[in-house]
Image (tube, rainbow, N blue to C red; front, top):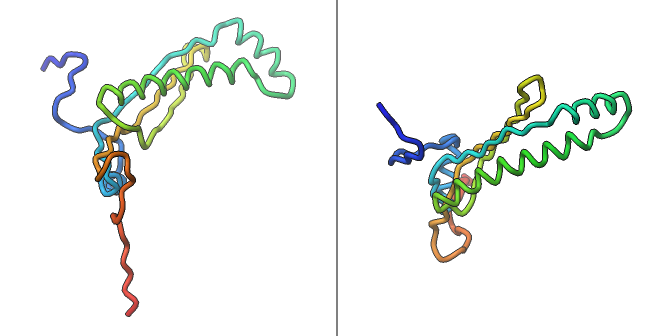
Length: 138
């Protein structure tokens, strides 16, 4: 079977549990697909040398913190772009994973979530009278 990049198909993919899926639908949202953002970020040998020196002292390693923020934001932006391509209003159930590669000089950040579109009553109105719990008093 030869599947070309960008193939969307008709099947739906999600990382939501059955209960989460039902709650989302019950509140007027329609899951439209699994979205992923990924980046591999080089931290550079010079930064590793600088951080190696700083690791002997107490305090934040700001160079690493800044790189982690940049890599995370890039992965999230790419995930949001995929959601926009599906016509989603938001992304829920987001999981962010960070892995270090190439002798800890590269950082891979992956953001995965489920894109959702609001389909409830009225434009941009929150869902009402749904998901009630009734507890008998007898």
